[in-house]
Image (tube, rainbow, N blue to C red; front, side, top):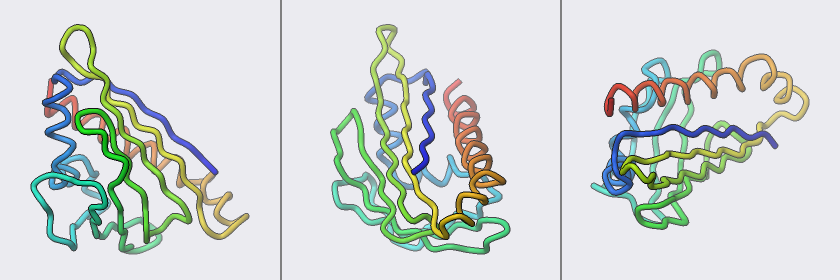
Length: 150
């Protein structure tokens, strides 16, 4: 099992940041263009417990993958989890949390626990490219959040 953790100060209140991340269509804004992210399911205006989101991503050199995510464990304004039900990982559990800061801004926390398929080959691919690819995706997301909310 692997993990990746990130935190970022965002110049929005906890409520404003929640409104942004609780809107599924905004995931498109935070995904690097090279992943060719495309929603395949209809999107509600806001997420809810049990929401299933189906989308497709392109992962070079592995081709296009359908990814089914379930939104769960929502604590409105504070946290939620997206968990892969179908996709490229053997296991994917992404915990999102927003912490209100004393100055009125927020700290956005991400903790991803994941496991790759293919045993030893998966471990080798992780070491050679997948870890770096995930870090680049989260780097892009952090830069995009700074751009959107300077």
